[in-house]
Amino acid sequence: MHSERPIDWRRRFGREAPIIVEIGFGNGAYLVRQAQEQPERDFVGIELEWPSVQRGLRRIAQAGVSNVRILQVDARVAFERLFTPRSVHHIYSLFPCPWRKEKHIKHRLFGHGFLKLLNSRLVDGGTIHVVTDYEPYVEWIVEQAQGTGFDLRVERIPPRYGTKYERKWLEQGQAHFFELWFAKETHVDIPLKEDIPLKTYRVARFDPKRFQPKETRGDITVVFKAFLYDPERQTGMVRVVAVEEGLTQDFWIEITPHKGQWAIRPAPGCGFVPTVAVQRALDLVYEAARGE
Image 1: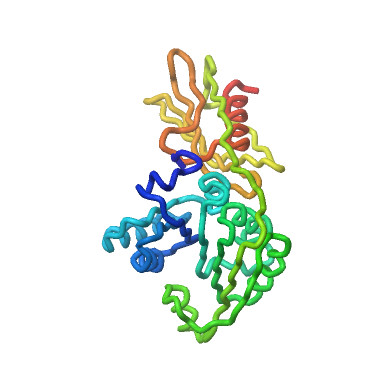
Image 2: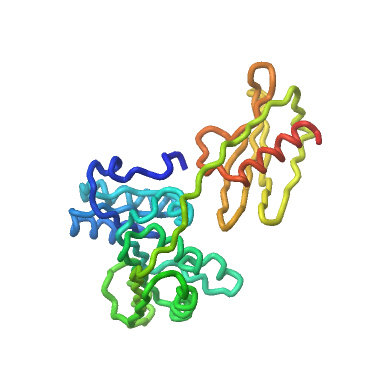
């Protein structure tokens, strides 16, 4: 993710206007429709998957709307690092994945910690709107919302949003859905998370045949998924998955000749957030490159 952090939305949109954020905009149809209907507001769509981002960008271009921007990033990272406290007016998410299996509940959005984070980024009196088809998810969110500074209202509603997933559930016979409205009553103070300065390395020699980085697991987990070496370019590439505090990052570290030595650093062009887990991955690659 290459962007200034936090993002200056006034500069990005070229004006000062209320900021509305959609988490998980899917194909972008509802996001674009909202932007068309509310030209006095600025909209930010958040998605993880590149195909959804592509479809969203295509819809934005076709509609010719200028009040939409898109982020391809985990929603937690976005609100931790890209939005300042008390800067967002409204947040909504239509049919987020409910992660129905017990072992997958940890992946659900709108847990206690995430709701407190959203509270901190909302203006006083700001709101959150969530729609789901899955009643157990509603019950879970209601429990999680305790002590997050919101007044929560839940309603059973007929279909009214026209999204892909709403149509899917309708075709399967579901006639009603669940709408959750959160109104911010008290402010929760959560400061912005800041990047850490990454330390990169150089080694005098590098033997790709002996390179075997060690993984680590725990509060910080670093797993090495692949190692590729190009003998013609004399460049090694290590694919890393680094996990910490609910943030998972998948990126590459390169080992390449530089001024008579071998440089170890994140590969150019791969998106990542400079965090403790990324630094730990660099440390482990350095140790392996030195034969430790």
